[in-house]
Length: 235
Image 1 (cartoon, rainbow, N blue to C red):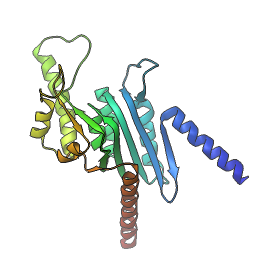
Image 2: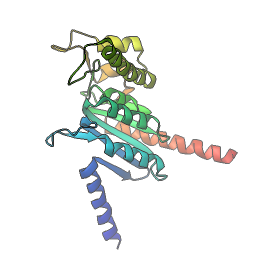
Image 3: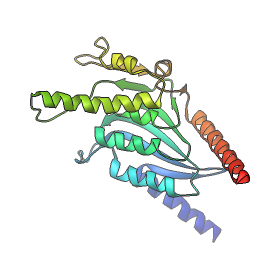
Image 4: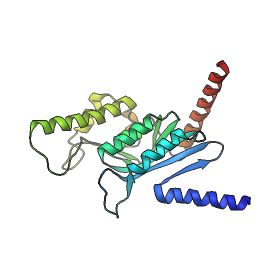
């Protein structure tokens, strides 16, 4: 019976990974792993041959993480080229508003709207070769050349910049300078930060990998459990 239960559990975990790129780890602590990869898909479906993170999958999963009393923390693994602004910000806001400890780890890259996702966790890591691309908001499709369009662009940019600066140590002035840098990207504006550079700019808190991310998250979970226990004793 125990062997059958283990097989069912293993099958469920494999199905989680295959269908949504997520799983819940069960060891001394119960940690949910959220994998943000490829392009963040919004209201329009991307081609079937593109790797995507679908916000309609991620947002309910984050709600379930918050509601599940057994899940103690969230680990967000990020390797994204960016994508839909509204969907990326919605996911970032969900992560930032969780009551449970969260840690993000930038692996290959966390570009464009991936930057707010990386800083939305309580603590952030980037691997030494990980990259972050910071640039102004871009729009595709038909654009009407009127003042209202530019005002709308500015509002979107302010939302992104405001979220980033409120969740990490970089100043708004420095972030804007990185966004408008003209010497790094061919035929474009913006900056690419690699590993330690992202830490020096106070966007990411520490250079590290999966080992460091797990160690930090488990430490945060223990601290929260101790704090909750002290509050219960006082009550």
